[in-house]
Amino acid sequence: MKIKVKNCQPGHFYAVGVGPGAPDLITLRAAALIESADTVIVPRSELAEESLALLTIRDLIGDQEVIEHIYPMKRDSAQTRACWAEVAAEVAARAAAGLAVVQVTIGDPMIYSTSAYLIESLAELLPPQHIHVVPGISAFQASAALLGEPLTLQEDRMTMMPATDMEEVARALESCETLVLYKVGPRLRQLGALLEQRQLLDRARLACYVEQNGREAIFRDFREALADNSHGYMSTVIVRVGRRSWEQPPQVVEVA
Amino acid sequence: MKIKVKNCQPGHFYAVGVGPGAPDLITLRAAALIESADTVIVPRSELAEESLALLTIRDLIGDQEVIEHIYPMKRDSAQTRACWAEVAAEVAARAAAGLAVVQVTIGDPMIYSTSAYLIESLAELLPPQHIHVVPGISAFQASAALLGEPLTLQEDRMTMMPATDMEEVARALESCETLVLYKVGPRLRQLGALLEQRQLLDRARLACYVEQNGREAIFRDFREALADNSHGYMSTVIVRVGRRSWEQPPQVVEVA
Image (cartoon, rainbow over all chains, first blue to last red; front, top):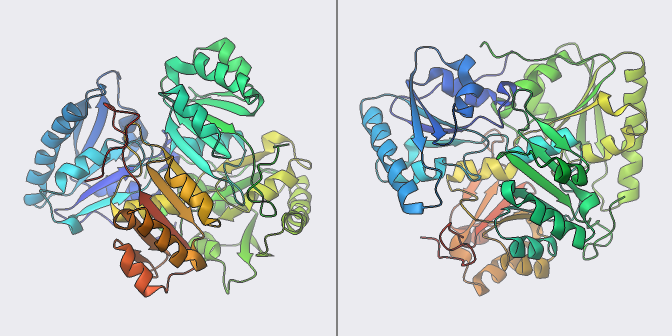
């Protein structure tokens, strides 16, 4: 392949998105940075047996130092920030010694990612021009690609949010053409009831573990997803509420 | 590199996202499919002198047939669909002859992309298991990465929409923590006035031609963007309206 890629610069830090899990959904830029790093930081949630990010990049690991950082899965901002501040100190020490450090993250580092906490802490320890972010394919994109259904066209609005609070989800359904919901896990039945009430069950899809080495499950029929209910933590719900065409932007038209 | 990639299958069609413009932001999957295709369809708007998608993939082109398809830049759904139906017929003829066809698209094929029209037409001409979509990095992701500012954290909602109608933009600002606006072009001053009125000017960023071979312009200070006003068609505005933390999901807290 003739495309030019750049290696890491000494003393620099890179937050690198590696996509949803399939190694070939890594970008060329991300792959070159991971391969040329001195240290690779791999986040793993305390609930996971192995790091999905590490599985995704394992073919890119040679003699780099790999630091697996176990982070808490609690809804506690202070604890989360404190845990990543420790990692930031390790990164800064290596950067000061002229080493290049990459933190890999599943999906995209700017979309619901632990990278945000690490970057926030590093901002006090490294010059801004030494901190880089490389985007990655997010789960909602991989899900839409597998479903083969467009997320947005023409004048459509798309909203993405965690499915924590069904009242907020109900409100969001009123003000977008496509709603992407993450972390629906234990609230799948509640969501099903809401969608049924709004007559949107036929327009909802559930995608679980997309691009994760054969574990993926796609439900084009949301009723089947509700009946199955064996969906996992890494699930994306996409509801195609309606469409706003160029010709009639303010009017929501029916999806065929 | 040891990561395994798959070549095109004969008689199949692939809508492939190639990211915002930098060749190294192509995924390994996309690169392998483009390199192994018999025919590559490259969309070019009638207003563009050259195809940005073709510039992005030129190092992957050898002896593939390249079809540059010029599409109208009119807000006319019927004309747009008719134009892509012609391409679909060409794709179907090649697929029937056992050739593999890739359509490349800037960004992601499921996000405001011409791929949606081609896939819609092809659905009547090819079996569904012969139609594939490969996600790509969208401009909002590349913009956020370059700015180094997270789009979403914890309970945040993100809305993405074209900045066509300022009343709709005003409404969207009320119901999300991050607003991503595409196609702001000629309405930049109108948007500036709205953001000033809402005291959100300090939280807005403008990114133009991101990852497009040195053409990029980043405005962290929206007032400078308004003063400059030389932004182009390919611009992304990101407004970080507020944050919803785990601890207080319903409450929008101030961004530091």
